[in-house]
Image (tube, rainbow over all chains, first blue to last red; front, side):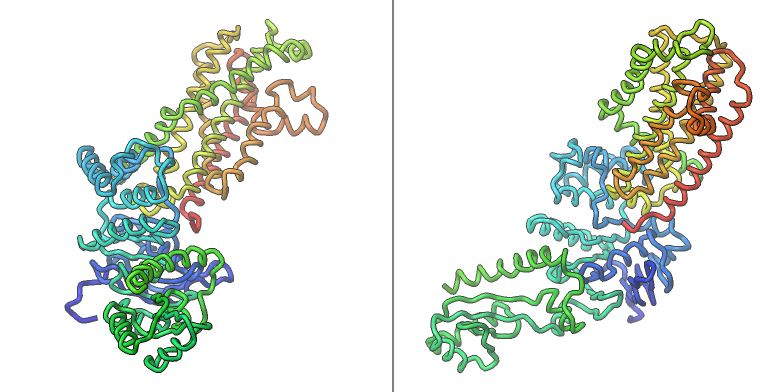
Length: 341
Length: 262
């Protein structure tokens, strides 16, 4: 790190944790500079939640050095707790209390003066579009509303460091986008954010730096662009009406590989410029394309590229992950298709 | 503000939260008040004649309600403990306990809030139960001092069972996991001196009934309220309560500090 960089909000070196025989964290090193968004990316069972639990004082590490806002979570838990806010994977709201009451409960526990507590609660309700539901029991909220209330409760104490453990898992696409906007807003205010996710696009959208966690080890870290450069798998798929069309296209596009009977995969970044160039070349050669779809690298590609094996524990996460990544890529693809067909 | 006053303030916040449930969901409160009252009606009105007649050593005046009230009081304390277990368990499974544990609040306040709320709820229901009993013809020969001593013992038992309930609620992975405790707390009074003297039971059952913690408490309450000597059952009762309270308190504290992976 350069000497001018701000002091790190979170550091860990050689972090280890086992549950019985099972090694969950096997020497994790990470540094999160103050005011940045850091993303720990990995499949289910990679150890993301365990790492968060150690950093936010819920678990003790077996070994390694950890500092959060310069303090050791094991030795000075209250100093760490006073500076952090945690929104876990399982929403931690009081379902029997109304949304507003949940926020006021947090205000009381932060020892805020009554008027200040009310002011913050109302502001958060309106920021998170919960004002209309403020007097309804949290148990009646939708998944997205619960998650927003959960995060709002975390923010009542105005923490300097926020941990978000899979903040969008299980949310519908619209709620995910709302959550992303909220996280961006927080980052814009200089709050340090430690985010875990199993979605590559989420890390891409939000994080300044990404670390990929696999079987308890960091296998790669860097910016989203740096990681993507190491990840092949992004390509444009072209569908043709007949074999002649494909053969003609193959002569024009040297890098293309065959995919199925009447399709070609053109590797590389699928940006607007690349697409336009590609279509122009096909047009100039007079080649008719039946369909086109854009494939962005997903977590499987990242893992395969970085670890040589696909995501390790996929049974429960697979469906969700596929749903989310296809939602993102089909969205892009359908726009392109409309303009092509 | 000092650490101690923060602890008191956090505990008050948690207490307010727990009592708010009772106000918000009066049905729960009404049921927890009504069940012991119904049991009293059942045992006095339905079984009372037969059981009372079978009690050779019924107190002078011989009314069964005088004999059975302490046992029903214990049952209502048991019901209170069951709902405390469920409330604590809900906090665990909903994840809000994990949130509390990541906040800079007094460690003890979360559990203290539950225990104090349990004390208030349970003591209110026992007062109501005594009022119902008085309407049904219960008469006590006790003076104010003995009433006070009885109230003290009821409070002590409630305190002990509440800490135990909190520990069970923290330890059970799901609400179903608390059923065992609920069952034990609600069945123990039947195998005690609550409804019939332990001497009238078969040898093994009688021995258990005589030596389990509820019997000395019931015998002491009965003695205090009837104005008769309590013998050494008072000391045994207090010892049981104190022991259970310390055990429950330490167990709950250890579970809370350890937390769960969730």
